[in-house]
Length: 220
Image 1 (tube, helix red, strand yellow):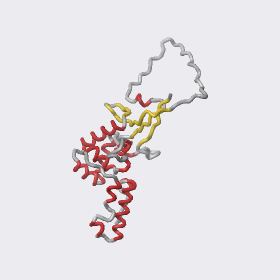
Image 2 (cartoon, helix red, strand yellow):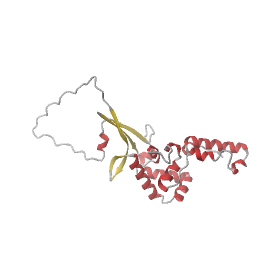
Image 3 (cartoon, rainbow, N blue to C red):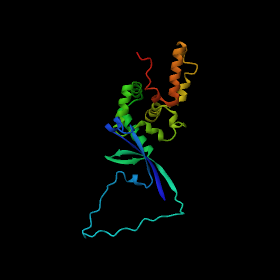
Image 4 (cartoon, rainbow, N blue to C red):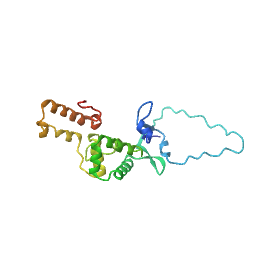
């Protein structure tokens, strides 16, 4: 029987900030069919060479099996993370615990977190600070449901604020609904301006802030 593990490797340090020069990726995925990733963090000791001077006899030839059914068992998803100075594989739940512990150590309160998140420069610095520890907040979407919804239905702010500071998260759809027929300040705007704002909100509902942050609005 062969075992499959799905393991995410994240770049940290300068490699994370710059990305892979060839592909531009910040992470990559490994499919482990032999369970070798369980050896991350273990000592690798090479046995000493034989003192006899003779070459060991060749091993048996590889076997070829036909007509046999081989099952592949999915044993779990894992991330690579530095633990006690060694790279080890951890479960998504362990990865989440480490990320939240690091976040709350850097940003102690919800008010401070909200302030940093609303400022693009401070938000980017916070994400980079976590990345230097090998922690990428987007990976929290691999965890179980949040408040009975799939994590992909939430903006990253709601995911982090719910897990780290205990707020009741709101899905992107729920936040976008507030702009249907309102609010009052939006109704008072000229129709062309209100239409642009609603279009931006729609982009947020579909793909989150990452689909809005890069938009340049009314350049001067």
